Amino acid sequence: MLKPNEVTGLHLELTSKCSLNCLHCARTDQHTFKKLKDLPSKNLDPKILDNLLKELSNVKILHYCGNYGDFTSYNKIFEIAEISKKHKIELLRMYTHGSSRNPAYWKKLAKEIKGFGEIIFSIDGLEDTNKIYRVNSNFEKIIENAENFIKEGGNAVWEMLVFEHNEHQVEQVKNLSKKLGFKEFRIKKPNRFHLLHTKVVKQTNNQKFQEVIKKSKTINCRYKQYKWLYLSFEGELFPCCWMGGYKYKTNQQSNEFYHFYKNNEGDNLSLYKNTAKEILKGKFFNQLQNSWLDKSDYTNTILLNNYKKIIKNNELHINKNYLQYVGELQPLNVCSNKCKNVNTIEDKYVTTI
Image 1: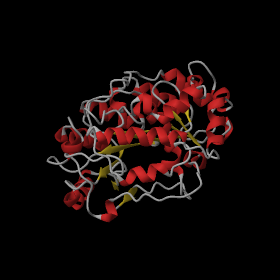
Image 2: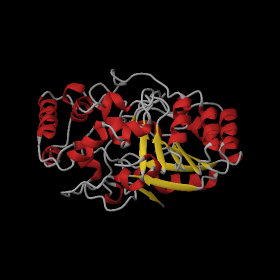
Image 3: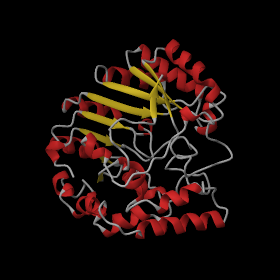
Image 4: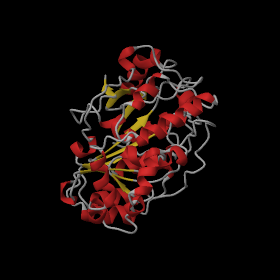
């Protein structure tokens, strides 16, 4: 994998907390559509990031997106901004639903990260449609917060997930983003419809907004190409964000990544216990790379049986074509799903229009 001096970017999550209940979010139980019961409520200690950046001295990009939480639910964001400046971070990129905090907070944030930071506001439509997927969001407050951030000199990007219920609004949303002063408007293809279907949100019929699943025989790790690592809200260092997300994403008994995590000293990934150098040299990272050459279908058998059981019990509708697809994944579903047929580090799910 990577050595500490080779890492140039860090994807991280500051907290597991969020005020929204988005339908396909990793923090949402797809049986109950409530918060995952196994997901702990924790915040990252800023000292962990400070120490990690001392060790990973060539990191120039911090990417705050994560899996479960929103940075506006984290109370030490201004301390994080100071740490970023201390370590001469060149790009600080943070994602948010934008519904939380007051105008004073957003004005202060704009000042603190001016010159090297940008905020990506995830807003999926207009007042009548954004709330359909982004449950508990407040469109009026989002716009107020974004306006205050922009007026204070902050760089803002509007990123929109396109569904059947909002695809007719893409041009309207784009025009509104320009009017408000967003520097960029992007559309993003929801990438979980190959697995999940709900009655509330449906995939658009417009092919240019749909994710296309491609198959390949080899794994080409995206994060290894990026020269990035992922830091979780628990202070664990993972090879990528998808692994950090799979730890709590599904029932642990049938979670193939969780089995891999437990069987390969996953407990030693914590920066509260170990240095980055020790973690990168440890069993987990070594076994992960070895697993890409493993022909065993053990993990996918677990996954397939779990999905079939769910369908049989009518607990969740899963695209049945995905069952055949999963059966062809080797050896870890998370690696096969995200990093097969990847020849470039470009994100194919996001398009600037």
